[in-house]
Image 1 (cartoon, one colour):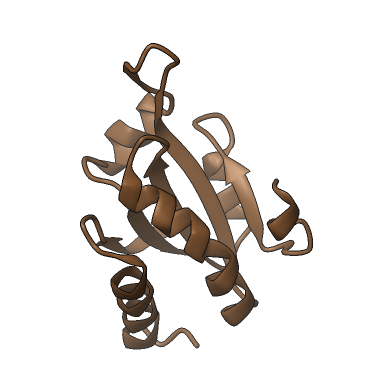
Image 2 (spheres, rainbow, N blue to C red):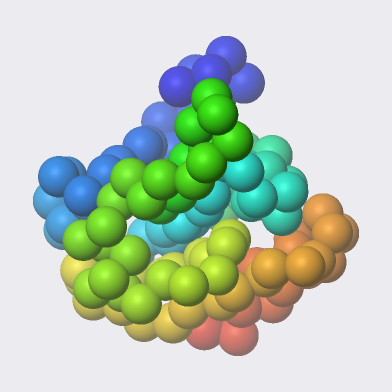
Length: 129
């Protein structure tokens, strides 16, 4: 976890091996599925600490689905998660309640302000404040 997120205990990292267990620990949580090479994913990752502070009763999980190799090629690093949840575009925010997918929000091709507004609107619409 980077220095900016050290004090935010409601942000954790997960992968194919432990995502289910991490989701199962939360009553309500938000998972950010991202690709390291995706510009819009990089924006979403920067927004995560702000959202975690604003919605401190929620758990937040980061899951890297695709990473860029040193030679520029891309590699899927969470194939089980990608397949089981049908993740095709990045970034994808998914709300889980009691371990079950409640709703997905794909905010690809949005700037920082647009992504933040969309995530807040989604949470407000489903009654999370």
